[in-house]
Length: 130
Image 1 (cartoon, rainbow, N blue to C red):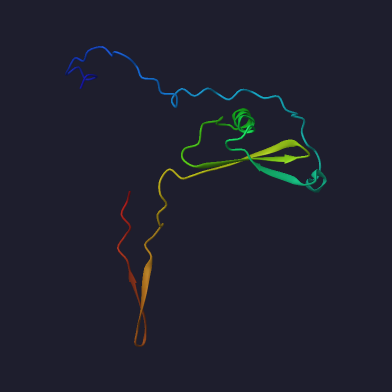
Image 2 (cartoon, one colour):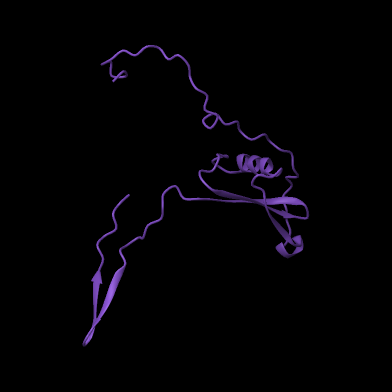
């Protein structure tokens, strides 16, 4: 109503801080960025290391910010972060995040009742939309 000019509000006294709205971008890290031109079996064993809440998490965040086309943003909800190493060198970043909405079936499940002489299929009512 204030924006529409229907009422007049007093000026804002203070603006409470919101650290989640003003996150700093991850700091750039210096790592060996020379391309790896070799066969996968020549790399040796790959180490998939969880980095969430560890000292390596800033490295993960910086690599995603530097190399992902959308940059880095803090995932919503529960999430997992992994770095893949070969010979002590990070090769890949892998992350999973929980869904923003609960999963639901794509179509109603149908029940099948057995009758004398064959089967009869009965559909359930459609799933309500969220």
